[in-house]
Length: 375
Image (tube, rainbow, N blue to C red; front, side, top):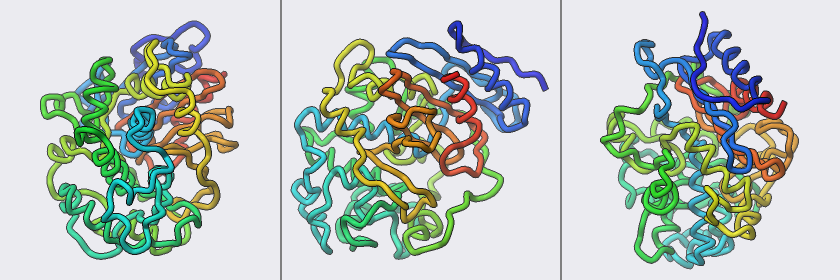
């Protein structure tokens, strides 16, 4: 099957388009897009394939796709902006701005701990309805009351959904007007700059959203434990039973960001370029450096990897997940999407697609594109 690659590729980056063609030739794509900026200048912006399962609707320049946990990197940027505004610091205990959160020994858990998956609340072990996730106050009350699943300071355990609730609860309570993570992104960071990234997709934009195809099998989680079960494997571990439209419109800052590759790559440029975005200062260099510094590293209790987390993002180190530069930060999302920022080269990029694969981190399709960009 021949595939037409649409968009633009700067001289010297032709290998990236070839990499996308190879992904399609192997039968691993339905629709996909990849964008790369270098020091704020667009070098690659390409897309191909179809936006629907039936392959009747072409993927367009402005096709949106849910990127799941890749959106955690965008939530990390909103958090960094709030820290830079002086609303709170990464060392602020959550209980200082959310007194109820101190219950059951959580008084020492900081905003930075929540962003680096150290709060001990990766999911809910006790039964609930999947639709309960749509009730923000209910989920926050449960998180505030819950006892951590491991002692504070004893490593990370990936928080697939609760990450977003913890960060959003902190931002709303610390900020002057109670705006949500999605509201801050829409009204202050992305919206005024015309950047097509949304936490909580307006109903009028649903028509642009691609249909995604679930992975052929569940991803491998390694040796089972209570933390993994709560995070991923309970019947209520993720939001459900409200339909696709309500899920798209809801704000789950950890899990349902909708974006184009271009939008993600542009926003990640703030991490690649000391807080500059579109030629303007968004976040101070000091706060960007804090956000990108390792806060915890080692065997994660939920993901079957040795991982280093900063304030909301994974650090590349020697993993090769985000190219060859150890200082690169980024995030992958369920099914394969990713976004990354390299402060050494000034590269910021993103890969999005609608055919999901059973890879938790380091989807081969994304790695092929990233490696081609660096070549």
